Image (cartoon, rainbow, N blue to C red; front, side, top):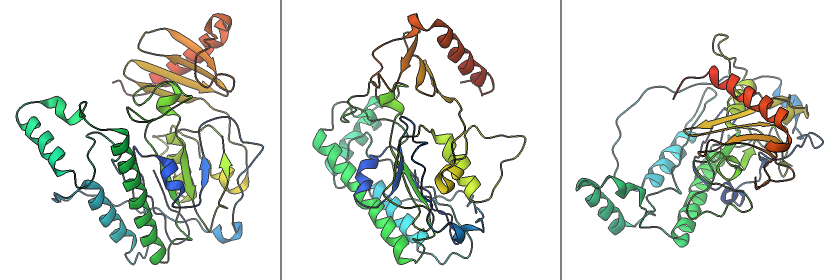
Length: 328
């Protein structure tokens, strides 16, 4: 996910299911990855006096039918570049959700493979879209590099528009890798709440607001970024609908400590909650487990038998949060 912010523009480019490392070659960035604790290394704000005025957020609503049979990544890249190049007279937000790299494992120009999958789907083979019989490490690499080039094109359009300095860009993946990804030393992958399924890097760039080249190991989760972007833009959530995340604006701009809080995850058949270095996890086996992530990032040393009180406390915390959410 990426999001631009400043006096002139609040623009966002959200790229889902992508390798953040590939973007690193395209843009200098402050990074925040969900591991460890970086309170002793606060972020450095660039030119803090320039940001006494908070920008507003403009949400662009409405659906329009759009048909284009070209490769989806090309379409998204072109339309995003066109949007950021407009003469904006108000702050703006762009949510750009790239789908590559993702199954089906088809890169730009793979017409034969695409036609075959379409043929199988039309013949009633609903599993064809998952492409379990296709793809390769080489094809995955090609798709990641295509994503990297595409994001670079959008950033170049942003620079040409003169808005680069005053635009905050936030990039992250929506989950860990799958099939052709290399998640070592983390266990699990996409669809799992083990670290390999949820621990992904994020990249943040705001030239006028935050110094580049910084790295943070502060654990955060996606709802924190929603709260952060609203806070930076001066927007406030409706009091009847409080946010699940915590704003990181003070940490990013002033080096303030992020309040201690629990990080919560759930998917069908799995649950997880992180408090500091401790993680409560229940997988599809139904067994409650407890891991100390700073000592065991691979989640192989289950501490539940030795820490029954802590396990019960974290499990109860997970269930309290879950009780306030919609059912699956």
